[in-house]
Image 1: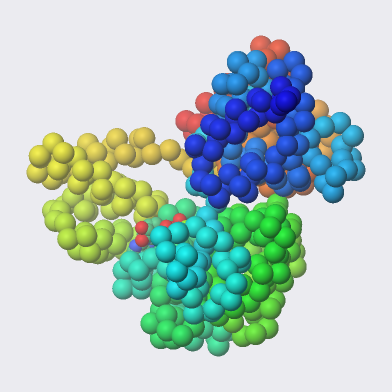
Image 2 (image 1 turned 90 degrees about the vertical axis):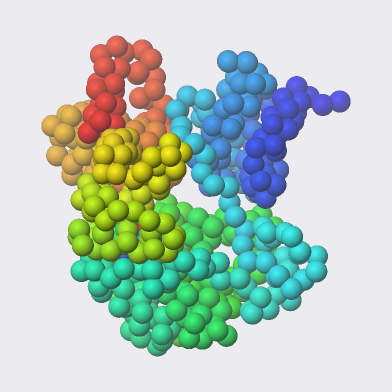
Length: 483
Ligand code: ADP
Ligand code: MG
């Protein structure tokens, strides 16, 4: 006979299974054990803190929906973290979070497992196999995961990217042999890091087809690593990475607050570097400003060259659009391209988005592409495109609101006003960014993940019980969202 909690959880699992890839399901849901159901609170046992954070960060919406479906609107979730079959040292009480309380954005892409041994018959048609479980995987069969169109031909040169681009070409033509090892490319969102990283990989392949190149995002790397822990094949994981000649890791800042993944990356980095292999990483920050990354890893990042990509000037923006439409074989009047380049000045990805919207509008409504049409699309586009909300941005808004210097918020001060401002910054960071609890804590006075969790709960409670506090929060919310 199944217990109540087992029944409820198995009902949840049926729904969850339909909503995520089998791979993510096996990684993140199969290891969960239901342990109790009391007062509409279902307690789930998870194998580690990291695991719980990951669920909380990536699957909260799904969990929220399924729990409510099974238990009604009162349904709540509680986690108990069990390591090595004993409770975590400082948690005699099961860890509690009220999953359905925080208002979360859409789920991110499910974890992806990458390279497959394409030559093996049984892998035909399978796209998401874990490379480590393939016995006898050969170097040459590792798929580099490069996107063909992200090449140097399509990467327009400008003052904004001169150093990064030429360093990239040098590395592509001579991987592991220049002093640019590692090559770290950093910039804000949508300014070409991913494109350039792929271009370097493609350049290597053009000059040295026999070299093993691999592009991964730091998120994929993390997921693979977690899979390997789960499957007890960490050695295979490390061994796999040792076969790579040119390793490209995109968005390395995603490793912030993940010490175990950083640790394994550190070892892989050292092995490759010592073996004269090339490493290319990208980040949204220069190494000096990266937080949540261990000093020994940061110091490695500084060994080679760090080059940034800046916002392109008008001529470069125009050239990027011209190249894009030529590649796509579409036509667009020059004055429309100029208008887009003039009006959208911060981010190449947004420019491309506007271009696509204009094309779509004109073809759907069978209208010619005129300046008037373009102008109305761009206006809507610029107004509606959400600004990216970062932890730094939230901290600034909170400090401005309370008239508090930002270094106070980042300090260890226990003064009441400071504590409250810090808690609000944590709350909004959890609400509006994809950062992990650990990464948020790290940026707000070097606190741990439990402190952030506590802050979120405190703020939530105060919103429910204290009217004037709720008013602050609403005003702040408005400030953060409207600017
Ligand atoms: P990031 O990784 O920095 O967020 P991406 O590399 O994804 O940015 O770039 C966003 C889009 O802008 C991509 O489609 C890319 O091809 C394009 N892009 C950025 N910089 C350039 C450039 N210098 N030349 C051509 N296209 C560019
Ligand atoms: Mg990118």
